[in-house]
Length: 370
Ligand SMILES: C[S@@+](CC[C@H](N)C(=O)[O-])C[C@H]1O[C@@H](n2cnc3c(N)ncnc32)[C@H](O)[C@@H]1O
Image 1 (cartoon, rainbow, N blue to C red):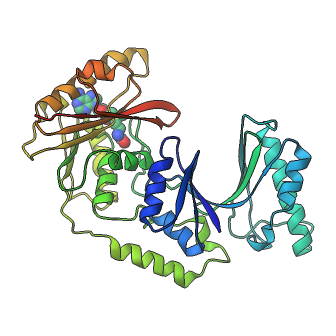
Image 2 (image 1 turned 90 degrees about the vertical axis):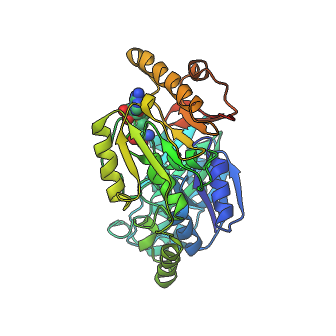
Image 3 (image 1 turned 180 degrees about the vertical axis):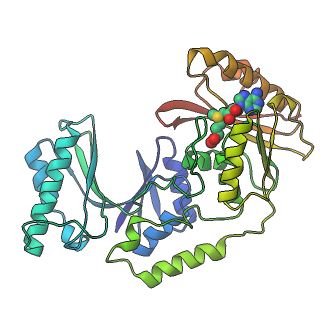
């Protein structure tokens, strides 16, 4: 079967690499990376992918420019091969630069076509939708429609450790990507000097311990009729066995705000990392580390609102000084501020365009070769 690991704009290549490392043959495209797998492979992807939003089973794709064509296309898809007679099948959707731009109409027509198809197979007039959840998605991008079944259910960034929302927290999937796109390789210290609720620290620890981020949660496909429960159990067992809990962690952080740190400590506790990662209250101007070449990875305040801009510029300048006083260190920061390099008084050695939610950002890496 063909699957799509949906990813945020800019992270498609990272997700492709993750899939390749899991042994799948994957191809990056806009919106994610495609791969072929069976049901247990799909579960493996759900459990192990750190940077993808969802794992979608691709049911079909076609050019559609009218509602009639959309109805016929969906009617032709073999839903009865996947959905049992009591399946709950909510339909979500989105339309981008297409002739069909009414999302609600496309969802309604898709739902109607699925119901008609299932009516024939199950000889039912009405669907109770009281059984397992099979979320259907219809996406139309430049007149090309794609219908998928969402095997994940709740989005994959919900790992289960973050239950309180701090100030402008990073999405877990983006934090996991920032760690992977930084120069950090696990044998040096990773330090977040603006750690907030601790997302970067937890995701770095997961990577270092080879801990599958989805290990302690469930997925929509867990209850699907096709899934071989014994094989799925085995996938979870293998992920548990691969988790190197005792790997020494050289990961720490600080933040100026004690309330953010309270939240951070709760998250560390919920992730089982409370006694493995130390965080302290500290202005980043005070941070001085002796641990050899440090890898600073951070998500500083951006100053989106007018009043906060001066403060954000001050933090960028302080990050520049932090790097300067740590010879051999690197600093990777995600920022929406085009003046960040000027304020930090340093030119980035590499840059990458990413989105933090809807906000266009750059992920900049600076080196102190000294
Ligand atoms: C965008 S938030 C970081 C969110 C974090 N990545 C998370 O997922 O929760 C920016 C953080 O920078 C902290 N901060 C601002 N100025 C600081 C300074 N001078 N020193 C240390 N931390 C600072 C804020 O308290 C805030 O927690």
